[in-house]
Image 1: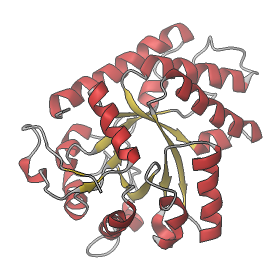
Image 2: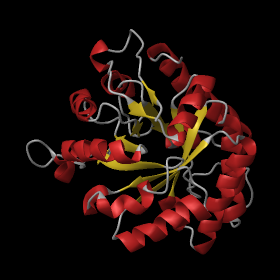
Image 3: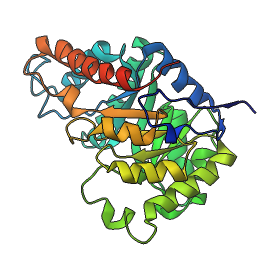
Length: 299
């Protein structure tokens, strides 16, 4: 099996230069290829909230055409900066039965606009095996997503239907999330529960080769460094870099370069009219990516 070794820019602390081999999945290869091509580790959230969509995208009563037109505009404006798009299922499910069709339509738009871009379903699923198998089939096979966020609370074996789908798909496990009260359970115990998740995920990855972790950019650099120490080979999806106010640059120093930095609302919902939406989204992405390029090595 092919292996690669990480290298970090000199601005990133050398304590994170690991010699642990990473078993390459095809999802991970696609991530590396796009990261190198765009000089970016940006993940953009595509979460349609009809209340926040700027004017000019159609009649207020035409919810689905408005959402679709708005998100198409954002995709066209941001794909040249974006390694992956993350679709939070809650925003689509909240729109009722047609929301599932919108979810599929947005994936189709991404595939058309930029076929190399990765698509992450932010579904946070995790259930008994036969239910997990149905979820995995829905998102990987029917919807054609490249990755999915998963809740490991029911145990790693419950997630087998996802990780056994193959290395073309990535399983992104909730570890130390960006919400303010995440420590209520994730930080429980000594050592904290999130470190056990990281250790078990690292162990599982030796078998599956397709495991990532969700590690919030709002978490302290010390916590992130502990997770990295316990899961040196796992890439992180790091939400909270935008509207949640995470100090992602400090977190990036703790996490190293195997990351996707996520921003959503700060990119989507800063303009007041359709005519300004594209320029605003591009400006936000460019600012984030310029900072990434100062901190990371893209080689």
